[in-house]
Structure formats: C-alpha cells, structure tokens
Image (cartoon, rainbow, N blue to C red):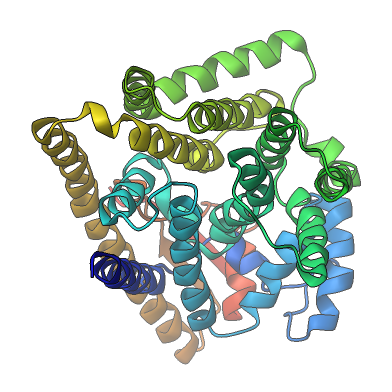
Length: 426
C-alpha cells in the first residue's frame, strides 16, 4: 500500500511539474536568437524545410560556433508552431527530475522530488534563459538531460546498480555519447570529468564505457575545432584568464554562496551519519565537475547568468545525494526547519518569478499588437520597447537603438518590416 501511494504521489507531482512548465513556457515569448534561427545562415531565407538546415549549419560552423547539432535542432523546432516546443520543454523538466530521482536509494520519496524541484528553481540565477527561452533551453537544460543520460551507465556501474544492456541500447548509447559531446563547450567538460572519475573509481572499465568516453571526446573535438570557435575564444593571456577567473569566482559566491553553504552542511552531516561512502564520493565528484564547468569560462569572451546552468544542476544533484545520506542526523524538528527554509526561498522566488513571466507575456502581447497594427497601416518601420525582467525567472526582450544592429534586423526580417528600433522606458 505504501509503495502504491508513493507511485501515485510521484505521478501527481510529475503531472503538476509538467503542467506548470507547459504554462510558463507557453507564456514566454520569442526573443533574441529565436528570431535569427528562423532564417538560414548564408541565404537568410526563412527555414521551411529540413533540407535547408544542413547547409545553414555548415555555414554556422564557419561563422558562429560549432554547436551545429544544437542549433540545427533549434532551427527545426522554429519551423513548427511554438506549442511543440512548449510540450517538449515541459517533458524535459519531468525527465530532469526523474533523472535526479534515480540517483537516490529511495527514489520514490515525494519529499526528495520536491526538494529537487525547489533547488533547481531557487538557485538557478537565470532560470528563464536556461529553461523557458527556446534557444536557451535547448542549449542548456536540454543539454543537462543529455549529460545525465550519458553519465547514468557510469554512475550505475560505480554504485553497483545492475543494468541490462541490449544491443540496441548500446547503439543508442554510442550515438548519445557523440551527440552529448557536441552540446556545450563547458558542460561537456563537466560530463567527461565525471565519467572518467567514476570509471576509475569503479575499476570496471569495460569496452563500452571506454568507447562511450572516446565518442563523447570525439564530439567535443568536433565542437571545438569549428573554424568559428577560435575567433570567438577569449584572450589566451594568462593574466586576463586569472582576472576573468576572479570575477567569475566572485559572482559565483554572490549568487550560489547559499547553495554551497547548504552543500557543506549536508556533507558534514552525511559524514557524521556514516552515510554510503560511494554516494558521498559521487557527490564530491559532481561538485568538482560543476566548478570545472565554471572555470572553463575564464577563457571565454563573456560570462552571463545562464552559464551557471550546468554548475547548478550538478551541485543540486550533489546536495540531494548528501541530503539522503544525512537524513539520520535530522530529527523531526531539523527536517521541518530545513523544509521550511527551502519552502520560504522557493515561494519568494516563485512569487516574483511568476509575476515577471506574466508581465513579459503582457508586454509581448502589446508588442505583437503594435507590429500588426503597423503592418495593417502599411508602415515599414516600428519602434519597440525593450524590457528587462526584475528577476531571472523570465527572459529579457532587448533591442538596440540602431536598426542596423542585432537583433533588430532579425526581428524586422521575421515580421516583414524594413526597420525596427528599440528604446528603454524611463
């Protein structure tokens, strides 16, 4: 009966997450890169056929970056009504939480699932950019799902979880290995670091595991050898890299300091409770992998809130692993206190975040009405308001004051206008 109740509670929770993510994704409008990827690189023709994507991504690799599989998928999704992305994005949110849950011994604890969702939503500095924005979600939160799927065979082998490997599953895993290796310049490093560490720790280096790592590494080489990548890389100067690293470290402490404090507390309690050493070690590996993903940005041209994505996901999973081992140290009073603190943080961010989502959706309706009104009147130039949300739970819609700068010309092309200029409200 308890198991049946747990399954029903888990199903209800996943259904609620799916509906919530479906709603807020639907309320998040197209911004920035979404408009650009509606058009083929090289010809600037509207993408209406899958065959257009291949030459488009070939030029993209030459001029923009090597994430051609990612952005090819973005162009494919933009061919269809946004409702398709809304459904897939909601499904990815459920997949991520399910992947988190299967790392734990008691994966059906509703409390653990709720804590997972709370951590990911509360501590992600740019939740809107990594989970709601079409181009951003495919690059970031969908990428983390691929990383965790790739890592599961290594995690399972290390934890001693038996797996049945049919031949077709092995083929899918090999394909997944290469694809996941092409996904992200920094996130793939965290993924590869974790896979290698777990392989060495488990002392079970079978040929499939080795081939998976090699294929992922080959995907990463394919990503980093794109002609455009060298031009977009930051300064190779050591002093500049140290300066960037210092700035990133300061920003990390400011935005994720509380998450790392929670991690340290859970580590201390897990050790005190004499928790499972393998799961504690796995938590430490995930923490280091997340920090390594951040360190990679020391050589990047810029650093934005969405670049915390892999770090937050890996660190949150690490916290959950430690929290499960630390539970024996928590009395009812401590458990209620921790849950109350997490709930308070979640509710505060939830209130401001959902308000931001609602406001930016209202702004998008106003913007669409203005554009359609101008087109109906035969006008070819439009002046649109830029809007920056007050929290990271939504996505900014920004335009340049110069119509010839990006993303203005992409927005103009998308709506069939000659010029689009932006302005900021007083």
